[in-house]
Structure formats: C-alpha cells, structure tokens
Amino acid sequence: MNKKLIPVMLCFFAMGFVDMVGIASNYVKADLSLSDSMANTLPSLVFLWFLIFSIPTSLLMNKIGRKNTVLLSLVMTLAAMVIPVLTLDFTMLLLSFSLLGIGNAIMQTSLNPLVDSVMKGGASASTLTFGQFIKSIASFLAPIIASWGATTNAFGLGWKALYPIYLGVGILATLLLFGTRITEQPATQEQKPVGQQFADCFALLKEPFILLCFLAIICHVGIDVGTSVTAPKILMERVGMNLDEAAYVCTIYFIAKAIGSFSGSFIMNYLKDWTFLLLSVLLMVLAALGLIFGHDTATIYASVALMGFGNGNPFSIVFARALQAAPEKKNEVSGLLIMGIFGGTIFPLLMGFASDAIGQVGAVLVMSVGILYLLGYWLQGRKA
Image 1 (cartoon, rainbow, N blue to C red):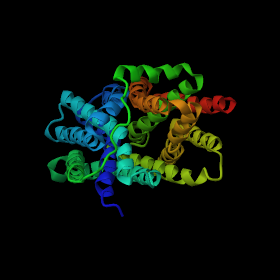
Image 2 (image 1 turned 60 degrees about the horizontal axis):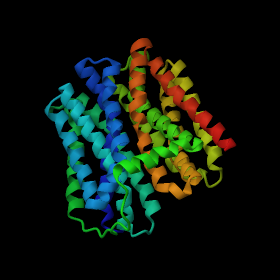
Image 3 (image 1 turned 90 degrees about the vertical axis):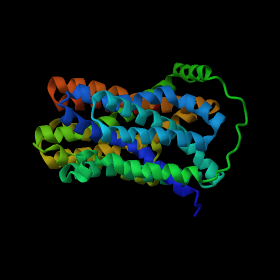
Image 4 (image 1 turned 90 degrees about the horizontal axis):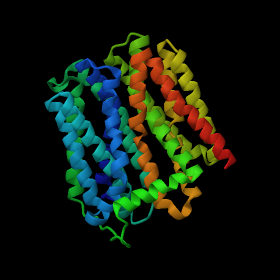
C-alpha cells in the first residue's frame, strides 16, 4: 500500500465534516430557540461558498500547489471546528459554518487532483471511490456522535462533543499531510484569469442540455442537504421523538446513500446509466410520498432510507452526461457543475420558510419540486 494515501484518506474523512451541518443546525435550533427559516440559514451558508470558490481554487492550485491548497482547506476546517466549542453565539456560528463551507469548497476542488499526484495516474479512479467511502464514514458518524454527546454530556459539551472529536482527526490529517512529501506536476499552461474562467463557465449555460445538467446538480444537492436537515424534524413533529433520538435518522440516510453509490457502480455494469437514473428518481418519488403522508416511525425511516439510496448516484450520472455533451470543454463543465453544489444553499432556505408556514410537510413539498425536476431532466435527456 502507498503510505502517502494514509494522510490523503484522512483528508477525505475531513471532507465529510460538511455533512454534520444538518444535525448541527437542528441542535442549534433547539439551543437558541430559532425558527426553521433562521436555523436553515446555517447549512445554506455552508454551500453558498461553492459558487464563489470552486474556480479561484483551481487558479490557487497552480500558484501554491495541490498539497498546500489542501492544507489551507484543512486549516479553515479546523478553525470551523473550534468556534462552536467556545461559543454558541449565532453570529460566531455563522462564521464557523462559513469557514466550514469555504474549507470544504477548496478541499473538494483540490483533493481529487492531489490523489492523481499521489497515484501518479495509476488506479486513481478506484482510489477516489475509496476516498468517497471514507468521506461517507464521517457523514454517518456525525449524528451518532452528536446524539451520544447530548445523552451523556460527553466532555461537558453535550452534542458539541462532535467538534473536538472531529477537530482531533482534522489536526492529525493536517500534520500527516504536512509531513508527507508529494511530487506534483507543474502547471503545463498559463491559466486564464478568474473572471474569464467564470465567464467561460457561465457561457455554457446557453447550451440547453448543460443548463439542464446544472439545474439537476442544484436539485440533487438541495435534496441531499434538505433531507439531513428535515428528517429529524419530521420524527419530532409526527412521532414525538426528542432530538437525541431523532438524530439517528440522519445516519440511516447517509448509510443508505453510501450503499446506493457503492451498489450503483456494479448495477450500472448491467443497466444503462439513464435507466438507473430513472429507477433512482422513482425511489425518491416514493420516499417523498412516504415523508408527506407517513405518520409512523417505520414509514419515515424507510422513506429516508429510500431517499438516501435513490440520491446516491444522480450526481455521477449527471456529471458524466454533461462531460459527454461538451467533451471539448471538460474543465469549464466541471467547474460549472461544482458551482451547482450551491443548491445546498437554496433548498434549505426555501424549506425553512415553508415549514414555518405549514409544518415539515411544507419542507418536503419544496424538496419534491427538486425530485420532479430530476424526473423531467430524465425525460428531456432521453430526447437529447
């Protein structure tokens, strides 16, 4: 085994810290007695930065290198982990969630190319797949640790025990990566200015199918973040669970999503990707119906699991189809679709306003619009 992969895999674990925003925002809502719309500004703020930082990060990598760019993202992530331990002041939490979002946007853009440097072009695809699996471990552990901290008052911090634990892993990842020598290929050509890169990316939106793909990524990420934020609230509203019990539903979502992604890589050896996309979206339609009409624990848990399994593959399928649609502009397409992750900003905000107005069913209805869009995307893509 390449020993340089150890710090890189720890970085993938740190990349998964971003998925704590769903359960963390629920605990902050309870601690500060916030409305849904106010609490949902926290996860929304995290994903806003993908719109702003994805393209500048590629320019930064050319100037300071991939490893140093990942180290910068880790430092920002560590700072984000420290603030909630010290204070739950809402303004400081906005800063913490912003740092987490900026760090994650930089990390998601720079860590994958760093893997290519470590592997020197060999077995990088399988390494990236394993890295995503490591990331998913951080995602589904976060609700478990938060609930454990809340019920045992671990370290005297309650649910916030999640932060020093992840902080420790982040520090270890930073130190190990800093001490690892990685040979990187220098930039082969002069990059365009950031403004020109933004212009080139957004110019692709004039292409009808690329626009459809961009909106599909926005909906996919919005459904992802929206489910992790809303699922515990549904259990609390309809079944009467307390937050410590309801938190575990987020773990079910992330485990189901990981299983969906892992199994999808095998299923698509036998099914066309477009057929599998339809099956995935239909599972999400069933899940949404269960979350709208279900009023018992089993139905809600099953619906969340279906949502996770169904939402495990649309990103990769949409991404691949978009690259195929504009093979001569792969860099611009990639940058544009990464910017689409800011869908995690739009959906939670709208869901917060809807749930304040008519309860959690309103949040699910907003999410359902995204699911129906993915169904429409499949229909349009079939004709393309």
